[in-house]
Length: 434
Figure 1 (cartoon, rainbow, N blue to C red):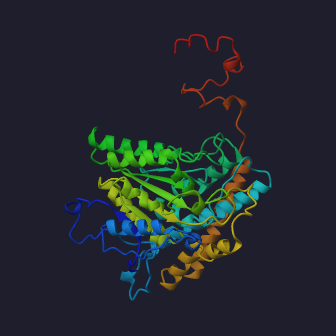
Figure 2: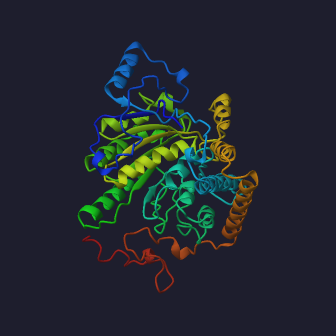
Figure 3: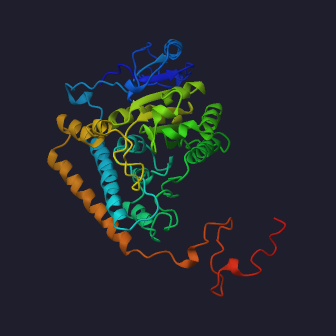
């Protein structure tokens, strides 16, 4: 693999050489400027005037730029040139197959009336979740979006508990109270999915602050935990995004901001919604590295993730990573998906990240077709079992309705007399002074 033109901007040199071995050559160090890089999206649709072109050129002259999005892969001459080992390849493949199979099953269950509300599927974007989350430790945290099922699966939340949550059952990871857009697991440090865009970014920033506080103030030397915040391209036009970039850079928080740019914010094309479609450039404006990577290639995502996670663990601060990807389905299962150009959808479908990884594994003799088929069969069984488990699980009792709604950690719920506490005339007695 040779780095030829990855989009990376670093406004200030990182004083971190002493913390690394002399042989370590990080991906995010500055290289010679390469002004030929282009945004992977439909750039032919962009119309820049002469001023915009001039500013674009000046930007590249001012900041050093290196590339990950245009990484060229060469067929390795020996096993020492491979990007992954067999074991790593199989872990990545299994995780991506799990995500795809699970979401396909969700579509079936939704149309059969087993799920309610909005359900947003992750098909096509698996390389991003797998590329980042499978590098994390259990103690590391992940904040997601409303498209959160696969992030939860990658973080280790069992498929049966995620499916049960989608079914609204008590065995779900939120006891059936969260549903599709609110996957949460304290055990797995899955900080939740968030229905409104941008909500998870401040939560993730707070988690990263906690890690830094524990290490530097409470002197917990072994606390090198990092946080990954996932969000979409539409989120990058709202205030919370910029506020948290500023705060994370100011305090050098151990966080990676991962933009899953699938080019569409519901039905709004990313190219029409923002003044500069290259989101990665916003990183250097706040004094952190900004990287653009091909989010349809799990190996390229993984290489960027390694360096970003490593920087965070070493105390070198945050990184903004823009993963250009594509969802193979509509915004949600209620979306007929009539706005996107069929040619555009076909172009990205031909770049299926799972197919690409499978080809890499087989071409480099890391595994056989039979072994990969066995993984697919295993995952099919896992997903089938998850559906059976969810379907057989009980619905929450009425007494659970008010639990985890109020600040009282016990919840108000049902009183000893079997009545709702809130129906008791004395329910608010003694709280007027609060």
